[in-house]
Length: 511
Ligand code: SAH
Ligand code: ZN
Ligand code: ZN
Ligand code: ZN
Ligand code: ZN
View 1 (spheres, rainbow, N blue to C red):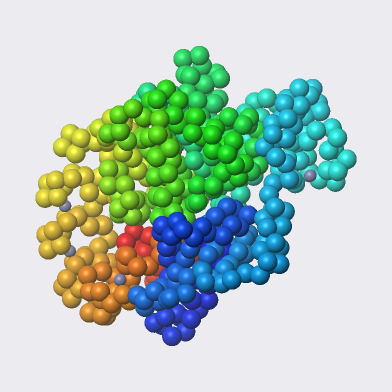
View 2 (view 1 turned 90 degrees about the horizontal axis):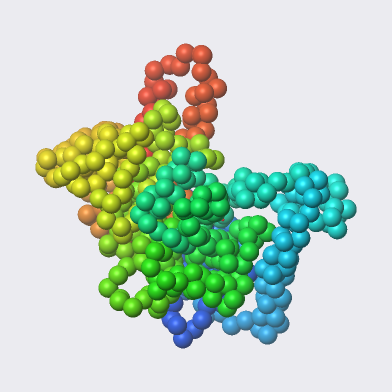
C-alpha cells in the first residue's frame, strides 16, 4: 500500500481539481492462487485496483500489505509487468537487507544473557530501542541509555519501548490500564486458558504479568506483531514476528509451527484470539487473515460446528464491514480506552468518548460490563449497554452506537443520532446544516441513489479512514486552538462554526 497512499494523494488532488475524479483503491481478494504475489520485505504483497467514478481501471498493481506510506516500503509493480532478471535479483537483495539484523534465535540468546547480568550492567539504548550487552556499550556510548533495567521493567516492554508513532503504518495505540485490566479479567472470567494476541502487545504483557504473580491464573499468551522490537523480550514460544495483513510469519515454518501448536493445544479448547489492528488497515485482508487463523485452529478440532472465539477491537463505524465478513459477530457497547490517544479516552472524564468497540462471536449476555464505568444490563436486549444507550421500544433494541442517547425517527423508522433532524428534501435524517443538493444526484462515487459517498460500498475503507483521521486531526487542532484561546472570550459565531465543523467531522466518522 506504499504506492497506494502516494497515489491516493495524487488522486485526491486530481479529485479536488476536477471535483469529480473521486476515486479509491480497492484490494482484490482473493488473488488468483495460480499467480503468487511478488514479495516485498513484509511478505507477499497485495493486489490493488484503482477505482474511479465507480469503474475499475483495468491495470491492477501489487503494493505492500503492511505499509501505507511510501517512505516505509516503496514496493510497486503492475500486475502485468515483466521484471528483468537483474531487477528481480536486486529486489531479492533488498528484501534480505530489510530483514531484522538479528535472527529470532539470536534475540533469545541475547535475552538470556541479559537477564543473567547484574542489575548495574543492564542497559537499554533508547535511541536504538535495544537492550545492550556489555559488548555493545561502546557502539552506543553517544546514545541515550537507561541503566539498571529491572526484571519488572523487562516484563513491561510496552512501557520501555516508545510507541511507534508513524501515522500511516505502525501507529501503536496502547490500551489504558483500565481497559487492559478489564480485558484480562473478562478473559479469565470467561474461562480462557490461552490467548492469541494479534497486535496487542500490552494485553500480552498484562496476561503474563498476572500469570506470574498469581498461581490461580495459568493463562498463557502468544503475541503476533509486526513490531520486531518485542522479540528482544520474549522467547520463541511467546512472540512471533508477524504481518497480519498477509498472514506472513517473518521467521518461516518454525514460527508458523509455534502458532499452530498454540492454537491446537488441548484439541483447541480454551483458546481465544484477541486483535486490535491499526484502524487505517483494510478490513478485507484482515478478515482473510483471521479466517486463516481460524482454519489453523479448526485443523486440530474434533467437532467442526464450533467457532474460534474472537475479540476484534475496532471503531464502531466498521460494524457493517466486519459483520459482512463475520456474520456471527456482534458489537459490544464497551468503550475501549487508550493511553496515548488523546481523542480516545473514556467519556466520563469529559473528554471525547472512545469510538473503539469489541466485536465478538461470544454471546453478549455472557459479557458483563463494569457498572462502575457506567454500564447497565438491558434485560430486553440481553446484553450490557452504556447508561446513556436507551432501549427504543419501536426498534426494540438499545440503538445507540456512540455512547450518546439516540432518538427514534418515525419517518426513517429507526433511531438516529441526537444531532440529526429529519430532512423532507432528502427524505431521511441528517445534520441540520447538511446540503440537500447532492441527494438527488445520489452517490458521488457510483451514482446510486440509495446512499452517499461516505457509505459507498465501492470506496476503499482505508480511504474513508484516512479522511476520518484527517478530520480528527482537524478537530484536535481546533481543540488545541480553543484551548490556547481559553480565558479570552470567544465570540459566539466562531464557536458555533467550530462546533458545526466538529459535528460534520463526527458525521463523517459515523456515517
Ligand atoms: N491496543 C494494543 C495495541 C494496538 S496498536 C495494546 O495495547 O496491546 C496496533 C498493534 O498492531 C501494534 O502493536 C502494531 O505494532 C501492530 N501492527 C501494526 N501493523 C501490523 C501488521 N501489519 N501486522 C501485525 N501487527 C501489526
Ligand atoms: Zn544505541
Ligand atoms: Zn428506534
Ligand atoms: Zn428521519
Ligand atoms: Zn456509491
